[in-house]
Length: 292
Image (cartoon, rainbow, N blue to C red; front, side, top):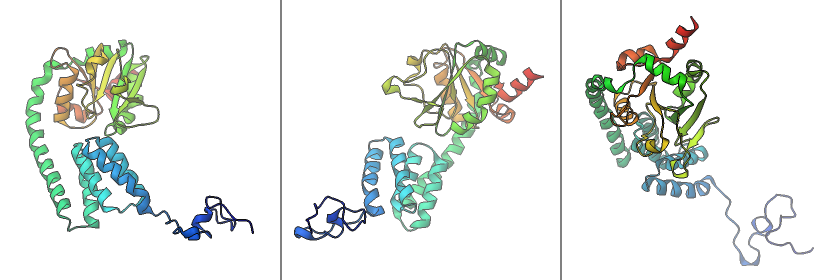
């Protein structure tokens, strides 16, 4: 029988290389170790930890999630994914993953410490929320009147709607009503820190960002302070889909260029408009009013 090259397919039909099958151990070589889930995820875990230490949290989140897609009950990946969400300020997701990690290994001191950090952050957020509710009325001068906001929406050259992974579902849910309210002005959709079908990826380092027109930012999206000047938006507005006073204050200050102009506020529901209390347009109500 003719000799078989060690890297050729094994003649037995297994689909493996000869050296990893019937040729294992030939020529003094040890058999090739089979790939296991643990071997497959090892480089992903290393890359995820490196990204996390370098504060590339979106990349770390993606890599840890990739590990869990291979080994769903991997404690370290579950634990660290919870920590990444905490570092991103996504406390609900942080608590969810840390609680799942605790079900796997309840006695981990590091895990207990991180759960306490998340609990403390929730308490701090509750205090900040009440303080921010007291601050909100003072920002009325930064808000465009509802009629003025509607005029902006219908006269803009284009509307650039910017969402993040955390606000994507809310933005998608209101998109059709928003289109009806703004028609015939086109709406270009941007997503920051994630990818979604039909949405352009906002990448400031590559120069991919909204320019001109009306910049409409989801209140829960990430800060725009580092690129809003480059956007050179003619007008700016904010879509409020969650009752998060601190985020609303932060984004309103950015969109108003720290008080140098007014910004429009659009509310997803009447309840939010009442809770926040700032002048704005309830998108669904405005569309229904036009149709009546």
